[in-house]
Length: 319
Image 1 (tube, rainbow, N blue to C red):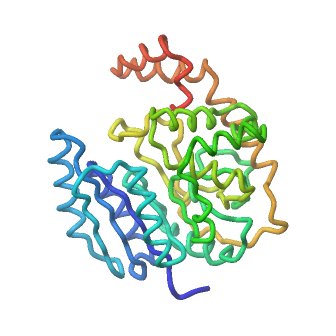
Image 2: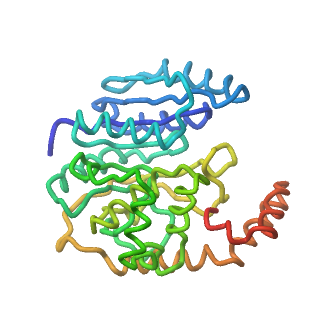
Image 3: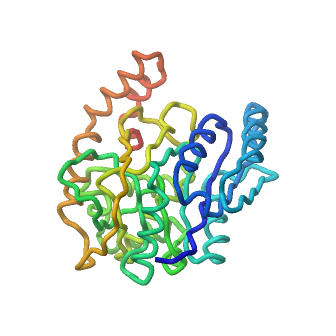
């Protein structure tokens, strides 16, 4: 294994408590002290976020415990997509590999070990372009690690050789998916609307970098190494974020032991794992399941959720 560990890229905005929990969790990793941390702090979008952004920036300036900490404070609001694309491109061109986190993610004590082991093990494997350390399916049939043609964005890593395939042109990606008649497979047999998410990105209704990264590797036939035991927990479904909703739909239970990385052979998609995702999305993404989630949120006081369910059920692809 290499003695040089991948830099950690952390993207933060206006949630100081989430950032604190993220850093506290990272520091429980032994490799934190040997890892460089790059923090990208976005500027406030409007006056209502200024105080929170100021609090976040005060906290990140106080962080210690990493090999080196470099902070980039945006002078204007970039938004998450632009910031991630710029940050990943800048650092991956310098280091060749990166580990990427957002401020609402809490990691397990062996997250950094797993990510670095995986990035080293598969560094020269062109057919693997992504590492994902979060599982939200809770499917007991999944092995500890497996290969799948899908890229998650909650605690991930990649290499420069793979990032070169990233295509920011959503329209070009959609055109190729449709011309090659791949949308059904891209959407896990029609059970989740990733194609629709991409189409909405093109229309300016979301600004997802992740759907474009997913489509970019999917179209190249490049696989992701995923986990059946989650080393990442997303706490962003508490109403505090700008891009997430969905209550406990994507809750994860952190695996607190070390997760070994063994190179999988042959290098091909695990069809049983893909079927597990199909089952998960079929169960959670039906109209009835989405309606029940919205009603539960309404009972907790989110009255906009019920109106959204009744008036625009087709827009509930993103929980």
